[in-house]
Length: 412
Image (cartoon, rainbow, N blue to C red; front, side, top):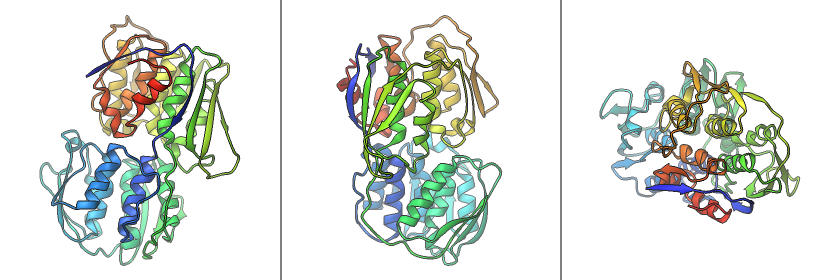
């Protein structure tokens, strides 16, 4: 399927954003470990969350988590401390995404995990058992999801868990989100040093839990506002919290530099309310930013800055190579179709110094990566008739994206 997209001349819309899949997936695992079937309120309906819901509900011998990296990491740890034997598998791309760091850590704690195919990659055969726990060292530079997966099962270990992270710790806000949610469910967990977290062997307590909306999904509406030529454009985003624990809530500060002003309906912290976005003048000639704490925002900002003719140099992008696709190469390839020549420095940096080439007008490929479709769709405001291949990939995190764009005046 290919969509041809045209943007509206005027934007004035209200968007009910999807619930945060990061919070949803953590809440599901914690409540399963608590031994309760209470379903969180406002649970995400995206693919990444649906595969965890289905797995926890039926617990089949073979669990297919499809393209969900979060589900692969969290379920690997969960199954290691749960009764039964299961094979955990996913898409062809998932079978190329490394998981050895997490498997080695769990094995060190006593987990029974075997590779069903190539060593270091899914699928995995996992036999659940009671794990002793204790002291563990793990690299903090690979994926925060590995660390969160280990932390989530910490309260279930006989001796708890003392987790020391070596190297640079990436996506630290996601680790802090995990800790906050663990405490919400009664766990005793804290940073005991700049690189060490201790989890006491204290079981979770089940409770009702509300899932706030997804700031990552909101980033595409910030991009729409920044790219719109409508000086009176207004977008209202429902269900977001001021003082949110989501790392991607930093988007409101980044886009304030790009001419998008954020205002909350109420000033009460940690209460879901409506965020209103309005445009103001942007005079920024160049943007430098380190995405170590929020790598999922990188595609949004790369595409947006290029189309705004704002030069940029972004760092902290190492994990983009091992996402749903190699996002650094995908961005370079697809933006060249629009006439922008990007360069990378190793695996960690990407920059645009204003270099242009002749645009080809080819359709944008999405590489089975939801964020490629989500980040490129707003480009239709600058390039009417933009085409995007396989647009259905947005179901991974934002199933109603295309419907919401149509409500806002976009034509597909």
